[in-house]
Length: 559
Image 1 (cartoon, rainbow, N blue to C red):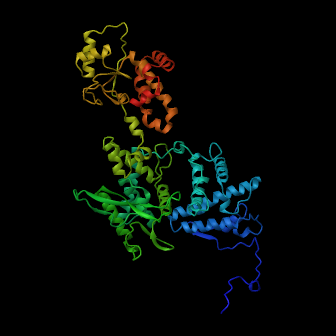
Image 2 (image 1 turned 120 degrees about the horizontal axis):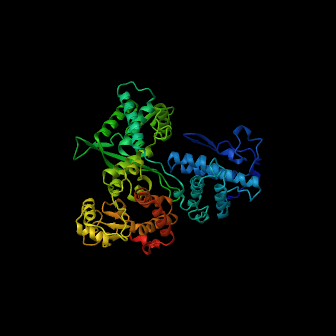
């Protein structure tokens, strides 16, 4: 019988190898479109340059560096290049800066492996990020900036949560509450700014068509991309991901319109299950035929560059690596050079920058006006849901504020101790365009509302017209049927102070969207009509002793 094979390691076959701790492998280099990220440097304090590693302080965290390097490599097969570049450069940078900070402060144990990261570590990271020095008015990172750094670290660590090496409970729930309120979004272009921008873009397109454009090939493509963005309201990524067959004749009006199909590139969100990159249909948008002409001209410009590997991408260019799609990095570099070349000035006398997100917001506001303020139709055209549209794209533009006009009627006469003769009632009847009987009802209080009076509460502009008196008191301030008498001021200013107090409950952004315009109408359109001393007296009395109807904020729910 043959003897069993011995699988044990034979000590006489072992070859001793001496490991030198500071002799780190130089293979941990991750290559991105923006350059190389050398992970070896994070084995040392303050990430010294590659030629200064021998004199740097070694931090004994080879396993941690190796884990993160492997994580980034794995995620590069699942995420977009831009996201991976962000995680490799920004996420790792923030994590190792935190560890170096803790080491310099002499706090805690040196973390040498991913498995040593706990909830306490994440809490310390949040404290460090919130107090990190920055060039701001407070000397610290803004809330949005702090969230951005934290998200970069969390996205990396979530990879290890999915691998089962970390628990998902190490992350606190919503550490940046109401962070969106702290940031100010981009504003839509004013009418004059938008006009200057569009005129410049058309002049450059005309130069391209006449073969006298002064600029590189990428700038030609960017000129067309910006014009398409202005005319369709699409995002940068949707435009750069356009295909050569993205336009088709409109089935109903082929002479004037085309159907434009765009796609959104979807990458994996590292806080959920990993997914490979995919392209999802954004929408099919009916665009003017001018857009179709622009896209055909882009196809003609890029036709000489097309090969078997790149056949369908619309915006392609030639780089050191060969023919490739125009990246967002190169897109924005060309955009910057274009608005510097244009030398346009905004309404504040500063340089007018070309921003696709501002074009999109301008487009959204314009569509909202053309649809008569219909958010559903506007959202459909923009390719958004209605809540996203209201939160991110619709805003009160300077033109809206300037063009707003109070449509109601303000009467400075007081009812106390005065008798109105027939002549006054007749003149009021003509001004309000109602009969004298309704004028009498207004004067005796039969048509009183929560914020004044109404000349036609049953069939007015915003009334339900079903035999029920209108109670949409916010709409009163844009309704031609509103009437305000001196005796209504206490009730009106009680409502005014309740709106002012509401700002502390619902936040600045939401308050501005819902109530700021009402306060502005009261302050600029109604107050100046009455005697200043009288207004100050009644306004203060309403603040101290509000009308019973407007004492509690629950009263606002009904309107």
